[in-house]
Image 1 (tube, helix red, strand yellow):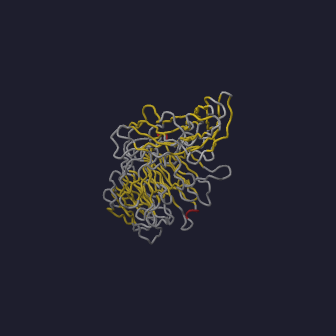
Image 2 (image 1 turned 45 degrees about the vertical axis):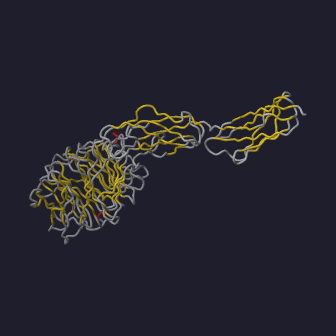
Length: 578
């Protein structure tokens, strides 16, 4: 949202990098940092779940092929993107997964059970048998010391059928009584182990999906706040693609394809006081994840071409700054972030993003190093202009100084500016800052009157944006001048000719100019025929003076919308006739 004096900075591209030679364009917006990106092709044709185990530095990715007769797997990757293992299911297709709080168990949905893998040895045991074979796939979560999973008792129209929430410690699962049409997605957080957030997906049978939170530490799930999003006319319903609970359990972020990235207070699911900035135009939210240290949030999206698909920014929007933006657009990288395809390492040093192609049949794992520490920047001293009195149509320099904390940047930093006048806003060309911090923004004002210049440093890979500074200037009309050449003396009643030139600064003088001419002698002042100015600025004045003595010829230009008025005089002595 733009307001007077403000500009949307999130899309400002200050740095473009191609990482890994794989066609991934990274747009380092104002608060961005340099990133390293490793990419691994994942040999699956559908996707169900991704789990990050920071204790053992492993990433688990499960397929979503749904068949009792299909043998599918959980693929195991290192934090460097190397595939190091495969957990093969002999009990039909795998689905949702969850990691225990101590990272010792990985719980994996198979067709008729929830399996438990030891994350040290990968030895598998049966955690619990399930009520149904799970042809529709299951979502799995770990909260309150228990494993929670969904059941959809049908083999077709899965997205339209009712799903039921079950819980288990060990042995047979028990029904919680909670349910919803379509899929149900979960979010948990390590520092809030007793909280389970659940969201309902959009379907033709459920056009106003709900979001709710449960206290899960006791024997019975206790529902807390709940919310639906449609208005009184039924519009604006939640289109849930992913949700995340902040590490401390205080905020819920929701990837809503119909809205963007919602940020809610976990206590009552109300909107946070400051929302996240809108995703780039053309991008629809598909995934969201908080970093393990709570400092950053990653927002995934589905977007075409060079529109960013992934944004990394401060988790608290009140800290300001813009996002670090990725656009996935190559055949070697995928075209978008897969729904629920984001995960962080616990210390926030790695972001794992699963991308897919436009048809959702190929997948890639990206290992991204997120933003590092940034330093402050500021404009210091007063801005000044050269010349001191600006005129329309003439070059104007706005001089200032930018101060940067921390290490000197590897690349020259740039200052940008916007001029606001009666015609609106005009963005000026960005200029590099000298090593001593000084800079000069150049402009050619196009209107007479007040003009306000707003100067900005949008940040670079190591510096935060500086607070904008403004300078108001009065732009005057461009000056003009008349030069005359006249004879020193003539004889009474003898024809005389005065030649001259009209010149002006700034923009070219208009065509068809005429100059007023006055003659003053001892009998008084009279107006002569006006002088027409040629295209080259020259003109001629002819007269037949009839009064002896000094005669003064005054030539005047009235000026125009961009040029000031000017006058010039020439004195001719008229002698008596012989």
